[in-house]
Image (cartoon, rainbow, N blue to C red):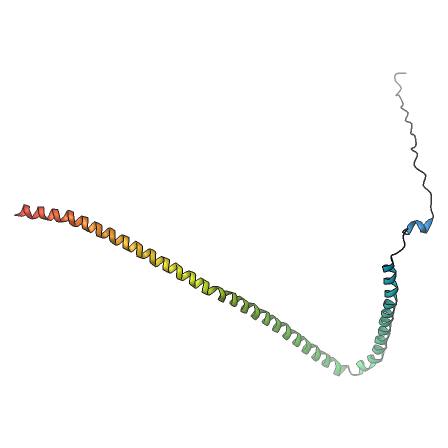
Length: 176
């Protein structure tokens, strides 16, 4: 009996969930409140406008197809003239568009250059004033240093003159 594996039994008790009532197909998918008055007016206004624009688009498409059906034989008959003419017109149009694009680029570049020069011109007098002030400060500083160095040289010359004058007098007395 000890050789037998013991089996465990598990009991599952179903949980009771609240009973939900099925209320019926489409009603459960629709919102409980109806659309607002503004939305209803918008739909009533835009539906005829959209329908009429769609009708005009259809009429335009039919007119284009009819025109193409009528013009195709004419294009085939006159293709020796029309193809070079179309190429000429296409190249001329490309030239005009390129010219306009390059002109616009040139104007934008010149505008940028003028604005840059205006800004640079506005700062040049300020830079000149600042440079003048620096030069004046440098001149004052140089003048002060020159004066100080001159005074030091003068002092040293006087010291040497006093010392040198005593030495020369002693030398002359020694010679005589």
